[in-house]
Image 1 (cartoon, rainbow, N blue to C red):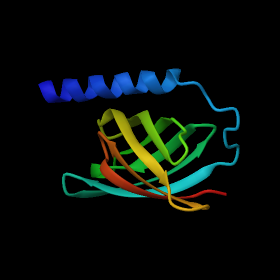
Image 2 (tube, rainbow, N blue to C red):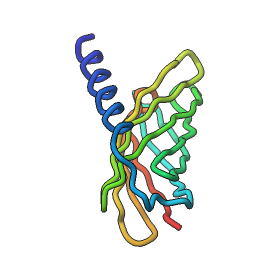
Image 3 (cartoon, helix red, strand yellow):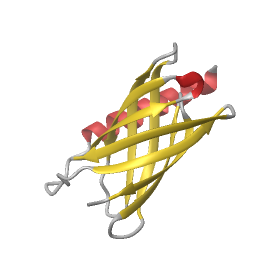
Length: 129
């Protein structure tokens, strides 16, 4: 129980930090889509997402066919882009918190890793246009 409270407190603190971070003037206008595969409690989870103007949205399918949407906020750094997010899932899963990082892996490709409290740990592969 204490570990859960500590993790949620840390995620909330990081979320506020991300929201208060100054935005870059040259934010990307073209969405950057990605696909994600992960797992939690032995179940495979999936999601698709897109990012533009340092905000993102992710549609995910978790354990027990729970579906939900996460809203993500990114900090755009030169190579690495950490993010935090909040979402809501069906099948009585309720509110989800998420966080992770996306890393540029070339001119038109990026990789990512993240954690979602409903969908578990996941890996991401995306395209930059």
